[in-house]
Image (cartoon, rainbow, N blue to C red):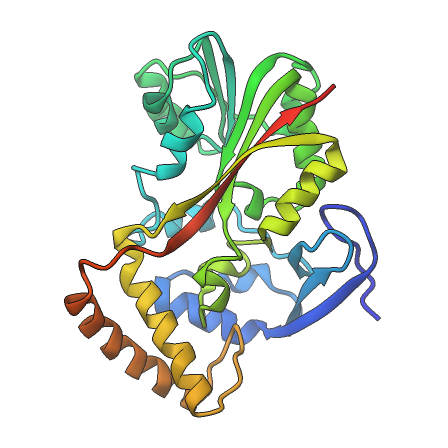
Length: 311
């Protein structure tokens, strides 16, 4: 029996969906990104679990990346996109009279997309804080849990982009965000969508620990509103970013091949057969990219939810 509780709703009604071999995951990070993640894993296997109460999918026991890990990933080409459709979508719900708090702000790039009365960013990277302060952006090296202790009901908007999937306790994280919000304020959350094609990607290490601690569907994000008495104001699924078209095509072709050859889908699959099928998918995806460049883009990786605090 799994002796763990859901990191969002604290339910102990969890089901193990897949067991992931940590040696294989360590090898994958080293080969694909040149990053050593061995220090994060003490067990031979980690469980990919689903909460039967809120639907959140999470990796247990947890393996959470540290600052050095993220510094290493920053060297990976395409890891961080400076222009994000979620920024433009979120900006529609922010007014010039608003006090805004952003968690996991990086260098404060979101500032250039919005008008505001005041902006505060929370960020752990001292390098990012230093760069932001040179341009007059106010960033603090502080967690949201600590920040909310002295800033209750202060902000009109609290937002976090591609952060929630990294935190060890999203239930506590969200409650701290709401403590900072004024009644009627807006919480804006963007995460990788587990309803998009990335749900079916094979060996997608960036969607596994120590990078991601959890994966989020629309159903679970709707449950966030129910658990915290929030009103859902808006949901936005971004279109596929052109940079991710090849990845999308590889995933689509791979699934057609494993269906044809009756090969089971496994998130982390280091079998010879899987690598052979993935190699064929890679070749096919490059050809498809050439001949389908004018096709309508499908739904992309990210979803944005805008909530309103009721009380």
